[in-house]
Image 1 (cartoon, protein in one colour):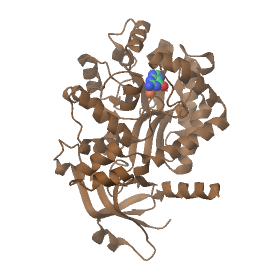
Image 2: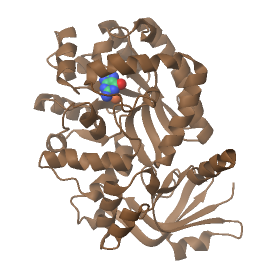
Image 3: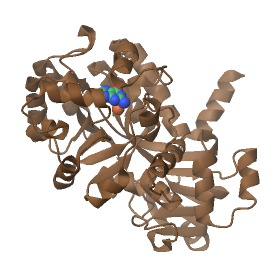
Length: 442
Ligand code: GUN
Ligand code: FE
């Protein structure tokens, strides 16, 4: 693999921005470059300096005037729901029963799982997302398809088999023992292979018996380096049902706490209707609440209260939650995040948005050494963003006067058309795929 020099307007975050003027929170190089060797970043800096590292054999990708950022990160979505986006008219529990538990049954067939897994990875890449934490279906075949598709593209992906042993169709249920055994086998097969990370995935308290929660506790204890992902406090009817199934628990959060499922590697989707006590319990255990704005609006679930998470010192991340989420685009997701917070009198600066999609989410996953920022030694997962991708953006950009304003325009008006290129471990993925498709179409 030849060395690669990526030239453009380089932007990477150093810490969480405190407001729209916090220029110390990021590094921006107007004529910058990233030097990549064997899939890793070796050097970043002004083009004139980085160019000195280039030899006659170095490939140069000149992306000026586009922005060059770390690849975007999505911390919660469901790969078997790729074809279930835009399922009409229902809130969470009815939506699951009417659409999702029907759709996920298709993933028993390895050919279907492989087809959707490939399309899912390509859709993420088209949208500039290079890492995601995904739920697979209950079928181990779906996990094999998921990690095989990620491996084929060399993507750093997190995923796991959903465990469900009640309140779901028979065809989607395992048992506490089967869920344990299949999860063990999948961890042995995939966790740590290449860039794969496993997430132990009891879907949520409603679809797991106490025995399955007990098995989840055992899995998490036996594999402390794996993630745990589940859903928490998304919808009022869900909360009532979940707490009725675990009457000994103080509240919904306490169900997971009692099974020792809250920890630094735990990702909790939604976390909308939590009490201060519950958010404080997350803060204490360092578990991560995952804000899924398009999903929470689409299912009519509610508004994530970021300021309360910050006030109580709890960690949070942001995600699409496809297929309740309506877009694979993290740009569109942050556009909705801005509005959800605005409705509550909270402000999300564009600097904060871009921090959250990159370094913020990498930190939530404890992967900031590898991804989420452009630094020597990091994996070369990089996105190139075009701030003028649409005529209306071009017009709007004519009167933009700062980097923060440009970022806000990309977030508010942009989508996959703004992703000019995406690199995974130093390999260009978007343009290559577009070309392949064009050739196939001829
Ligand atoms: N809660 C349990 N399962 C799901 C799911 O698939 N999507 C969402 N949004 N919430 C859930
Ligand atoms: Fe979800």
